[in-house]
Image 1 (spheres, rainbow, N blue to C red):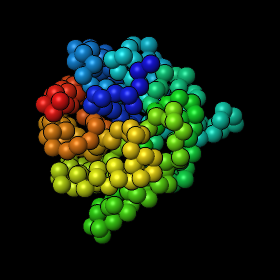
Image 2 (image 1 turned 180 degrees about the vertical axis):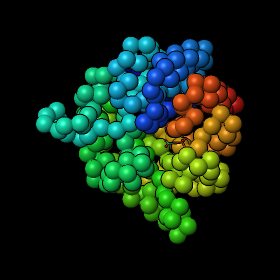
Image 3 (image 1 turned 30 degrees about the horizontal axis):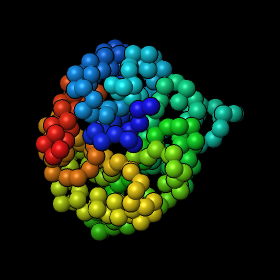
Image 4 (image 1 turned 135 degrees about the vertical axis):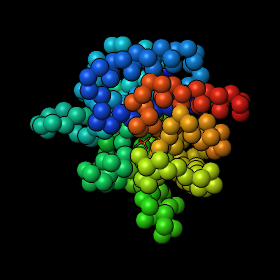
Length: 261
Ligand code: PGA
């Protein structure tokens, strides 16, 4: 069974957010799928489209080439919850991964760490990889609270992990999302060192939890981001809507990893 966790390949996850109408979805996925196939498994890729598209796109994607994922789930079991989607339904539709705790959900929907923690547990219980997002606001950064904020988010949003639980953590500074701004390599290495220290302290050194970076990633900055810092891949918003951009980022990931192998 293919799992993101076991992969030593760079991980690339596209978050389509609330986009994907008309012909965009099928055309883009077909082109990405063909392009990724030609990389011969050098990158582990997933696209998280709106949940309405997961089932249809799953029919056209080989999970060995790219996975499909969801952008959120509720923690509750199936039942009387009009409009909600849980991990069981998403998994049945074809999702293998679910983004949880994205800053847009934390701010627009008022999601708390405690809510995210329950969602992560339900994702694991349904066999999904939980891709948990953390990251500071500009205010947090300006008031020198980056390490503290991220540690609080990790502490609050990640439950104690059963051995089979699959988790990825994405560091997405809120001020970098959709702004064209990216952190400096020094800012990144401080944050990733902190996250690694936290994870090792809490879950032990043997536990493999890939770390991604997200926020204004594009085909033109992906190589530099992947080359200068020691994380395991990228979470891409806007640029993942274009197959050419996404494949450009995938190539940058594959090249960066080949250069350090
Ligand atoms: P962006 O979004 O790449 O458009 O900045 C990243 C994200 O929100 O995951």
